[in-house]
Length: 262
Image (cartoon, rainbow, N blue to C red):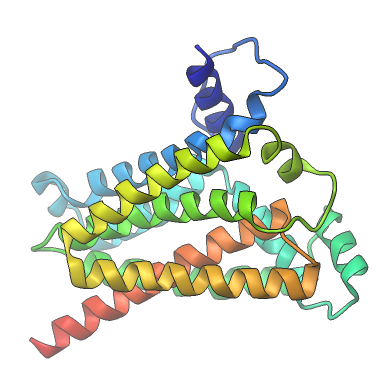
């Protein structure tokens, strides 16, 4: 029953997937990150359903590309995009750390948030277009793309648990309190399964995909520590959006180069 409650809390927090009304314990939120990758599994499964079946290949590519872009937003309700935009405003403020943290809490958005979202959204849309267009005769590329949404959430959870926090309060502090080691081990199992999956699908592209996530994670830690003094819930959202975009872009570039060289 506890495991189901933790899953319900996680899906309620990080997605718009309907969950039954339950009586939650006070510490259930502390275990919500265990099931955070499940949101990525749902997104990835739906993207596969849109692009892999033979009946869907008869659907115009433009429709499948649009659906592949909309599915993550529909499932999550844009939850992490909010954190991404807040962080973009703070990053471009060039203000002291204390002021940056205040900007993260400001519910209003500025010009830099919009510019950052448009820039990243266009890059992601371009990557998705390449992936879908060059996957007509192969399912491997779609499977690897689907895994991006799972791995991104696993690493977002792990970095939230393992990296220094910028604030002593807030949602991220509540989510990462309690039995940290148990949640870390569960996410580590998720990561091992996901790494095995992408390497099984195609080892070459899988390795490059993992390297993209590794580079994004290292850059995230460097910037978060230097500019914010640690990580917050908003920076975690920024990391997730940025890391997924980086991984999808690397995958698209490899697919495109491979196709042109054939």
